[in-house]
Image (cartoon, rainbow, N blue to C red):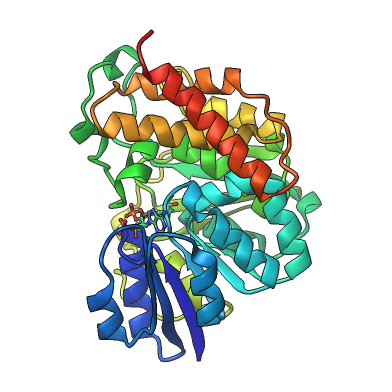
Length: 358
Ligand SMILES: NC(=O)c1ccc[n+]([C@@H]2O[C@H](COP(=O)([O-])OP(=O)(O)OC[C@H]3O[C@@H](n4cnc5c(N)ncnc54)[C@H](OP(=O)(O)O)[C@@H]3O)[C@@H](O)[C@H]2O)c1
């Protein structure tokens, strides 16, 4: 029996994870955490003793002694739990991409010391993890992340000027939390995933590519140096990568409809539009600069997305806010978590200044 600490239990990933754990005789929930949502009913239904709403994850994790931490918190708030699990060699099933983007080198160092498994829950990275099968980075010519393109695929920059929050939340293929749904509309999500892939798989940015694939059937691809291109195909259903991470190296059954190959699959691919969606290019630049620039990118994006969702800024101003914040921070590397928290806070202040009209 593996004990699962589920952080972000009330969210989109969290709710699907509850379903996966309930279906598996080899998994049990040992801890639940949310940011603000009540957990009493869920805890009672699954007999979970360790429950926490808000605050620090460390005490909950220490007390509940999990075998697996499923980090499905949204945003930088997930950093503490990611570092906790990596440092102790506890299996980390990581949905909270923001923590790996922000903590980068610190997370990798903790992972090296802890020596545990780091299993991606993001569907693209789960796909790449499976295509790679543990092969060395030098065998890889290119990792190709697929992007649905979000609700605004095909629109020009001018056409994005007046899109609304409701438009941005209307994702064509995935049902997800509000923040990641907006990130998918701006392509910041793919930018975060680019940086996440760099840290997870040790591949330099010049060998990381993004391609738009509107039907989200191909979840990502690996191009090897011998010319072979391996892809992972499936329904866009997050229960599949959640289950893969929680039951690895087994593959538990998941009740998803099989892809009907004979009906014909729509496997179109197209290049992303950097002009309409500059947050992808900005993420790559932040990743290449290194230090705490990725942390700043993430922090400024969180501030800008929250402001957009509150109706304080328009859609195009999300990218403008992030670009302006990145201009103002020094990007100095973080030696420890305190440095990282300070870099995150500095970027948030820079983004907030940009939001307040002069
Ligand atoms: N949804 C997807 O399909 C998907 C796919 C790939 C990756 N991801 C990643 O998975 C993560 C979660 O996404 P989601 O779509 O599930 O988001 P969501 O639906 O917004 O859920 C976020 C969860 O995080 C909790 N939370 C927020 N702040 C917290 C804090 N300070 N401490 C503890 N818990 C906190 C929320 O609790 P309350 O709301 O109860 O306060 C909620 O349970 C994100 O990093 C996202 O990028 C999601």
